[in-house]
Amino acid sequence: MVKNLYLIRHAQAEEHTADKKDVERQLTSKGYQDASKIGVWFKEKGIHPDIIVHSFSKRTTETVERLNEQLGVDPDHIESSEEIYEASARILLKVITEIPAEMRSAFIVGHNPSISYLSEYVTGAEIGHVQTAGIVHIQVPFTSWQEVSEKNCDFIDYIAPKDIS
Image (cartoon, rainbow, N blue to C red; front, side, top):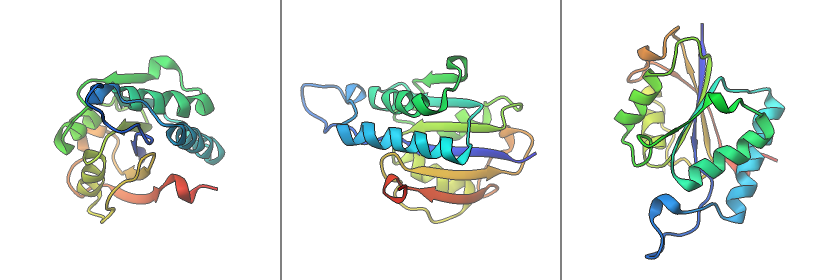
């Protein structure tokens, strides 16, 4: 059974300042708009994740909240992960391989550069820099998420908010 993985970079956040920790940075008004826009896009496409795993940072949490206003994913299927914040591609891969096998569709919402690196690592495709609120759709041709590894998944699409009308 093919599984669908959506690697999503958080929406645009305020600039880093000396008086605020990076983890506390919030979305800008454009970030809120883009997070809502991708939520609408997922809804229009009939894409509904079985699970959402996201970084515990404020900007990533806000991205998921806005996205989920459109999708209505059960809060029991949304997990905040400290591990994803400042994660390497290897750590993100570990998070993916721990998704229960019965989950057929997963959203991982995190940060660059790991979202971009992992997208290229598991697909072998040249995706480049994933923009804020960018979505990389990957098909996993296995029954278990544990099998996801280097260049063994299929790159389907990259969607940036500016590409959504």
